[in-house]
Length: 161
Image (cartoon, rainbow, N blue to C red; front, side, top):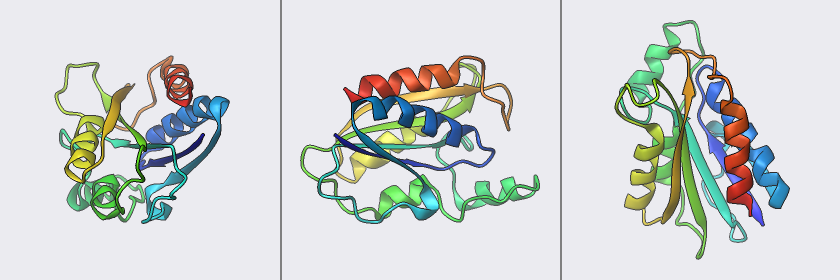
């Protein structure tokens, strides 16, 4: 099995989740974890599993303006996000399994999900999404809640089977 994980991360939390998922997926095959800024615009024909994830920004995936707001916090935001990447990536190879993930604060106390929004965007682009999963941070900039990296790795193992 060959997998690609594309992530957008502003404070490092989503990157940590992406890498933990990747560790889990790697138990079942080859995996590459890449930031959205360097993700391929054309998906490899031999790709079996694509995972796409990002942080929640204003109840959804980030936009140019929400990334600019991150810059006000002395962070260097990504130039583009998973929203733009999903809109521009070529059609998925036949039989490609797709899952989305996101980081958010609040265990249901706050509505919205980058994972759900990414799944919707992927479907609008003609892709079939198998699963979407949220992982939780303790505050706007993190850190991740206790146990979230283990949960991400376990989910990755499940997806990698």
